[in-house]
Length: 110
Image (cartoon, rainbow, N blue to C red; front, side):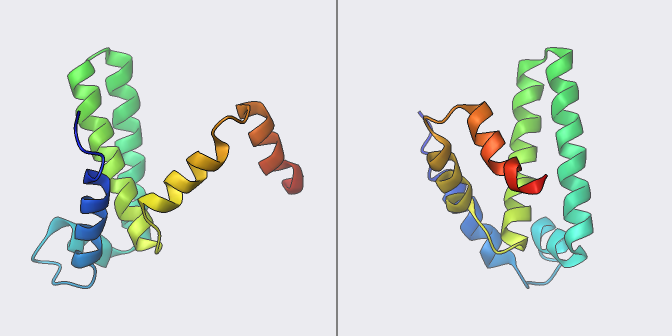
C-alpha cells in the first residue's frame, strides 16, 4: 500500500512553492496566475477525468484523477486550506447518510 502521507508531502511542496519565482516551477507559475487560472485547470482535469471514465480506460482514469487531485490541492493551498480540512470534513460525514448530510447542508440555503 502506498503511504497516504503523500498528500501531506505534496501539500507541503505546494506551500513551499507559494511566492517563488514563477519561472522556477509549474506550481509557482499557476499560483502566480491566480484563482481563475487554478479554477480553469481544476475544471479541465474534472472533464478529462469524466471522459477517461466514460472511455473505460482504467489507467488513463488513474492519470486523470491524479491530475485532478493535484490541481485540487493547488486550489486548496491557494485558498489557505489543505488535505486536513477535507479529511476532517470526510471524517465528520462518516456514518451519516448522504441524503441526510446533504439535506442538513442545504436546509439553510433555501
